[in-house]
Amino acid sequence: MALLERDAWYDLARTTEWTPSYISQNELFPPEMSGGEGIPDDAWATYDEPYKVSYREYVDVQRQKDAGAYSVKAALERVDLYNTADPGWINILKEHYAAVALVEYGAAFQESRFVRWSKAPGMRNMATFGMLDEIRHGQIQLYFPHEYINKDRQFDWSHQTMFTNNWVALGARHFFDDVMMTRDAVATSIFANFAFETGFTNLQFIGLSGDAANAGDFTFSKLIQSIQSDEARHAQLGTPLLQMLIEHGQKDKAQNYIDIAFWRSYRLFTILSGIPMDYYVPLDVRESSFKEFMEEWIVTQFIKSIEDLGLSKPWYWDVFLRDLDEHHHGQQLGTYSWRPTLWWNPAAGVSPEERDWLEEKYPGWNDTFGKVWDVMIDNFVNGRPEKTVPGTLPMICNVSQLPIVGTPGRTLRDISIVHEGRKFHFASDVDKWIFEQDPERYKRHENLIDRFLGGQIQPPDLGGVLEYMGLGVISAGGDDAHGYAWVDKYRGKLQTAS
Ligand code: FE
Ligand code: FE
Picture 1: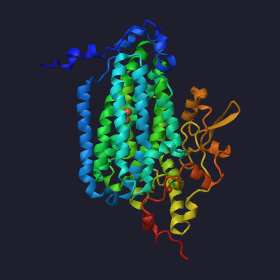
Picture 2: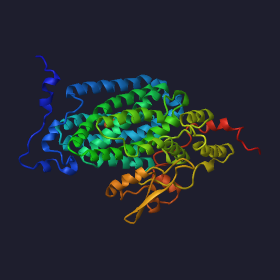
Picture 3: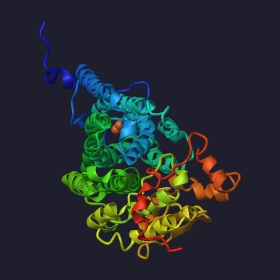
Picture 4: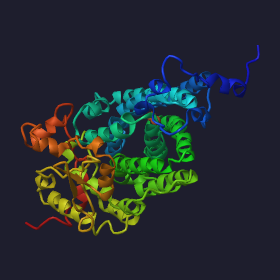
């Protein structure tokens, strides 16, 4: 018997809509879970998912993707990448898996909430596939790093990180709880699918896959391409919702969602993508700088998708463009200095040749960030390594949960407000603005410094803080990825005559 073409039955089969008779529409789709207040009930059926697939097709394609990624992994196992690749690369893997794998699992919950609570039948259908996508992403990104655990305990963080109070995990959880786990279905889809996935996953998954292939890590390259091909599909869930909000007079709300989600995503990606791309990827295999990737994927492509919908660039666009030259360099200085608090071994990325590259990509780097590195290098060369690790904790932003950094001598300032008797600190005017959009949402959260000062971290010293963050418990904390070999290039030049 001939099968019908998908087009002939799809619209009928996915229209799982009915009129409830025992309970009200609001009981079936409570506004706090479903969102979309002010959009008429009959509008939801018009949600037309931009990507149509049947279950049979979906399973077949996903099986092929898995087969591709797993077979490349199996074929390359004998290459022994762990022992042959540059340590900077290996530590990108550690950072990536730990920051991403469990978040993917969380995203499966996000999608499953759409399956139940979205008022749009087309979206419920598409989110079912999105949920399966995210389960696959969680599983495969736990399985791939697992082979490295017996070589290096820091890979154990792939599974553990999101259960710890490591400062990077606090920042990531605060962000993903905000954009992915605690808003209604409409808001979540715009925050997480549209702003985060359409905008930023491209950066990590496409940006790094080229670098991975250049570095000979075809396993990782194939893996993240396979993931991004799923993201490219389910990220489209949010676009029809934005169109619906705009059509029903809620353009300001749509813009506000994007403005918040864009900045929060950007700040997290300065740590996840910014630092590795400009400092850890071995110089000879770097495809582009973080700023160049951002310009391609965010400034050009993502903004086009916003403007095509009739929305505008976020109000802080000038601040953002300036920040692209600065923030992640400050975070690199911070994370490298506080390397014992990391679950990976950071590469310094500031050998003379690497500094030439940084100066070329970020004119003025040597006169600003480079000056701080000069002091650090001087301490290494002259036998004072203890002076390169701070003895105190940094100020931390109450929105991003990341250290407050800026360009030395130029932009570093404390922005704070007192709200209901408590002082909150922010890394930028945009973070402060985000807090002020919804203080009720953010005001109870305590950042690492609040916890330290509040006595939750015992003993109240660096050892207590490290243990609180899981360092020395799950694995040792971070140290220079290359065992400080790069410092040798400065010896002779800088060594103080004795
Ligand atoms: Fe995913
Ligand atoms: Fe996703």
